[in-house]
Length: 181
Image (cartoon, rainbow, N blue to C red; front, side, top):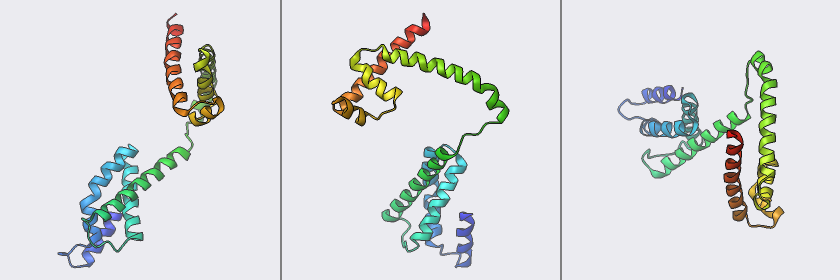
C-alpha cells in the first residue's frame, strides 16, 4: 500500500524529480526490512513494521529535506524499531489458539506430565545445599526477580545471580542422575 502511495505521488509530480519520500523509501526499504525480519522472524510482520515506520515518518515528519541525512535515517530506524516492538507486544498479548478437540484430548495427559515434572524439579531444588536452595526456590518456584531475592536475603544482586547460576548447574547434575538411574 505504501509503495503504491509513494509511486503514485511521484507520478503526479515531474517523473525526473522523485519526491523526498520516494527517494527515502528506495534508499532504505531493504535495510529496514532486513532489520525488521531479523527481529520479528516473520515476513508479513516485517513488511507491516516497515510500512508502519514509513507512514509514521510521512505523517509526523514530512519536512525531511535530505533522504541521505543521518538524522533522517536515525529517525526512520527508531520508527522501525518501535513498530517491531509493537508487533512483538501484539504477539505476546494474543492468546494461543488450538482446535478444541486437540486441546481437550491432550489436556489431561499434559497436566499429569507437567505435574510430575514440576514435583521432580521442586524436590531437586529443595535438596540443594542451603546456600543455593533459597535463591533457587525463590527464583524458580516463586518467580521472584534477582533484585527482590537480594533484598529478601540481604545479599547483593550479583551474589544472588551467581548462586542461581551455580544452583542451576547443580540442579542439572541432580536431574541427570535421577533420569539415568
